Image 1 (cartoon, rainbow, N blue to C red):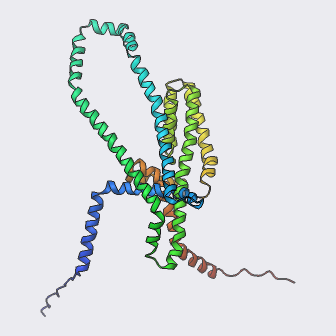
Image 2: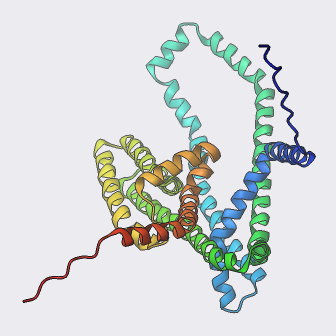
Image 3: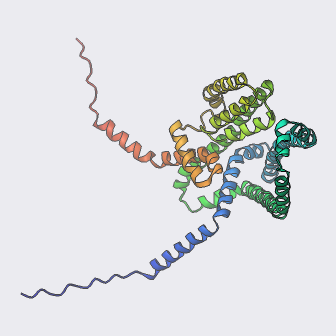
Length: 362
């Protein structure tokens, strides 16, 4: 018997589906093309949310929100400016002192036996040739210097843009929140608005607490370096503070750098530095962290390290710093999203558990 020909399958895709896919593809392409701007907006949003509780506290005291936002960001800018000045000042003085002592260094080097033997071996022509080649490289070095200056200018411009983005988001945060919740039903808004407020509190507590802990770490490192006579104690303190912003990992890296610098002074200084850092790490983990963070961010060490690794691979050092608040927000949202199901499962387990037998009385 002859088999009937196989039926033809016709696949019909509505034009709305095609339009949706095209629109989605355009949005993805636009996001990839403007990835740098989106990252700036994301960082500005996190910074604005981190400062929002401080601004809200001033608003509750009678301040206007715009004035409170400008005041808080101005204080933040002053703090960053003072840190830069404190760091650059000692380093610049050391560089100036080194430049002033170059003639003495050259005289000491030229009077050594090794230098005299180097000159007597007829290598002076090689030195002149090297100097001539170095002089020929001056134009390219100048271009490199101009490129570096342009990079610094671009960084300053990006910082100014980030500041204004944060300011505008901070001023308009309640309006943006109310506009977004306007798309939800009142029941959903009543459920998720407290989650948003709790997430903002977690972001603010983690960021401000992280900065406070870093200030403590910088103070300890700076005092230790100053007492032991390490070079650039203020620079080492600021470097330790910045590295300590990275949870779990940054403090260890800072301790290694401090120990390496202490080894240039003496072995005893390196041992004392290691002991001080070990003691401080225990104090930070079991005393400073509970005092600063309190109950805002409750993440295990494993969760923290995984968050830092993932965020740093995406956003670099900025991602490592923002990993903890981002993980805290995810934890809060997931906890609320799973709350109804956990309640149902708890009720089922309670119903399935047989009641305990009452003791016989006689």
